[in-house]
Image (tube, rainbow, N blue to C red; front, side, top):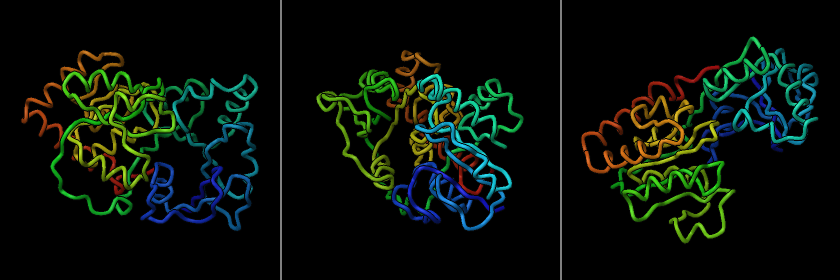
Length: 296
């Protein structure tokens, strides 16, 4: 099957398997051997399937243009399924109409599929699982892992405060990546990592013993997936497929910080429980999220 991706990025062609910023959409392009085009450009050949991410500033995008070059056109969810409801009313309606005009809707999680089915009544909604391209990671060194890292900063999008409260119940020093929504003053509380490429991030994450990501904003679920790939236990909220599938015994109900603290204490003090969580995470990744398992 010939596949093309259409996004607002400016390049044309394929993403190399060793790209140092192998974020989720790039990984999909690699796994599908897809060509990429800017959403407003004209392909020089026809495709069986075109996949597009609806532009935030122009959700009225006419999929009919892509259907001139693609036998079927799919739209890909970006961010949580409720994100579009922060648009103006007109743009919310435009987004809805663009969704319903697609041949296929690709979503991140089982819960997202349920939502979009109820929203649109569409008869072809599929979960496109996140994945990691190992060629882009390179060799992961065998290091002594120490400490705890949370998955995001102190904003509601990432739920960083929830994660910090849990992490600090067992660890004096709590690490976190620097994200685009980072708050002023976080460095007074957290040990913030510098901004880094995706490849650098994976190798830095490999140095930590436990991950915590109590993020209510459910989307592609890459933090839990990255941890699972490395065999690092990750405590997180229900509703995110990568968390529930790869870290089943470390998944808590949204808001249940007490249970999350109990799990962290158990991971820190019970070596058998910790090693079992490591084993489960890495093996669930291989079973469900390895590139060889990827399909649409």
